[in-house]
Amino acid sequence: MKKKIFVTRKLLPENEEKLKNLFEVTLNKDDKIYTPKEIIEGSKNYDGILSSVSDPINADTISKLSSSIKIIANGAVGFGNIDFKAARERGIAVTNTPDVLTDATADIQILLLLGASRKAYEGRLAAETQNWKWSWDFLLGKQMSNKRLGIIGMGRIGRAVAKRAKAFNMEIHYHNRSKLKPELENGAIFHKDLKSLLEKSDFLSINCPATPETKKLINKETLSYLKENTVVGNAARGDIVDDDAMIEALKNGKVFAYGLDVYNGEPKIHPEYLKLKNIFLLPHLGSATKRTRWDMAFRATKNLEMFFKGEKPQDLVN
Image (cartoon, rainbow, N blue to C red; front, side):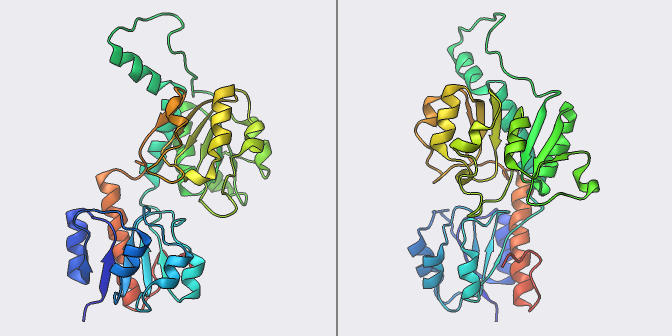
């Protein structure tokens, strides 16, 4: 008998067909974003859940899931939306989908840094007037070439950002939980202390995972360590940044511009961001290529398949 899988979001057709070949599935044809209560109710008597980053599956939700649920396969590289410790205590496996998002997300991070530093939003506003005129000081931005890039979190995505930044002849600095092996550093300079990294950076790329330790890692104090007019990009998670502190830094010139693809409480955005011009906003497009979304869902499906075959899933996080 096929195992029953509750799928929280609408997938691409090829991914849904693959799931239906392997499991008995309930699909979300209207792509409704389920509330925790709807996830609890909808997954009753199911064996597993294929979730997405938009699904808040906290400890309270996990405590109320049907006892039949044995695995939550999260279709994302991050798993901050799931309380994996609470899941472990209930004997529920949690998996993610690393590797397959690396290139797409690194591309977006470079876009955020470029879009912010070269005043892309203000440029769009000017172009829409159809009445702009060139001048020597028209929308002068900051050049990435030959600058120092500080990377917070030198995992797969952070290293992919570093690789791309080298095309701009940037000097790469990084802060990580531990120093990488020389072959992974590829010439990057390690900073054990976050303060040291921030003081050196002309551009800052936030690529660390969202954990209790990194929540509001970028706050009023840490922002004060930056050089004046630093450019910041965040393609990691919204709650790594204290929005109020960042908005203050954008207003007072400590941060020249901020590019972000992720938000606290997304899809809602702090209203003050929308009043600023030195901002470059994207609606969480980090993994938004067809190839990447295919691979994410196929990898989540593979984790489910391995688990129900009695094998250890390749991307088990708890």
